[in-house]
Image (cartoon, rainbow, N blue to C red; front, side):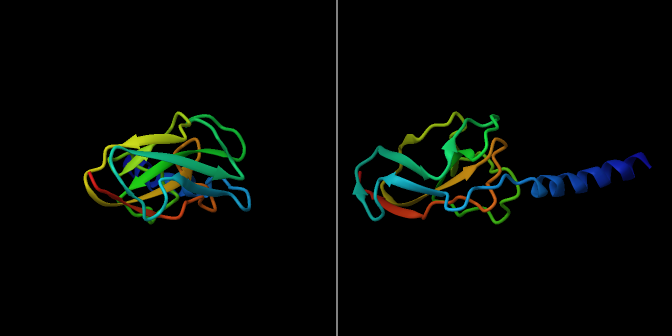
Length: 139
């Protein structure tokens, strides 16, 4: 019986998280200020983040209409946005509220995209995702 209850709790927990996505205000937008889409640049690459209609707050801090950035580098937006974004080399977290970073990307073509997430690293509902840009690092 104990195992049955534990199994049921483990199955229900992700559903509880999915139901609790933080709302984003109408018109909220994330975008990459720099570099520009299609830019040919030398590394290291300085990336400036933009946000309209919301504010920035560190991870773990709850304020209405705020979140923190996650930068997807050569990665697609995850299919299930009801789960916390994982921290990987392709999904970079900016949980201290940072609005810029410098990347050491190898020469070649790369994609960059921002996803804003709430205090628990879960994307808002509706999700606030920047357009994906492509840059080419020449050296």
